[in-house]
Image (cartoon, rainbow, N blue to C red; front, side, top):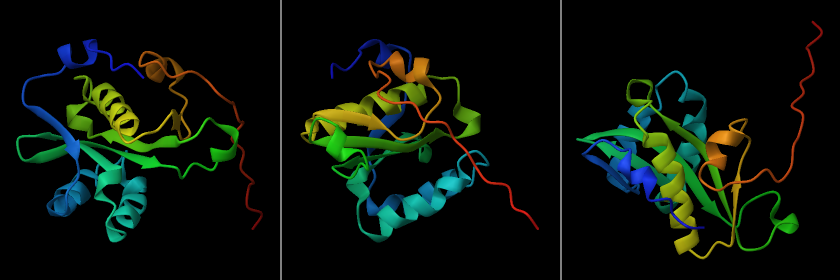
Length: 154
């Protein structure tokens, strides 16, 4: 993976990207109250309860967490079908009031670079329909699945 320098040129001043630390818990939970991100709160709690702050990457502006993404190593369910070691991105988002400023794209690029630094050979995105968006960072479609659900019969 070659980190795209253009990502940083689009960012507003003052955004800091880093791995989460234990002191981020309250700020992260506040950010995850955003209606588009709230479904991910239990998954972040699992990592936090396991002390896996290094698998959470955040974007911070001033004293507020405005974006987050999970970047896990060697846990993909597709591990046996990809070149190892495998890094996985999941549950990435930016709070609604901060969207459209390049923060999400930078989060994806920076966590991918972080996974590479941690020794991952392959990067995998868990469930996305944003093929062109991630494609601009160098990701390519590996597999396509059709999402299905069964209606409840009451």
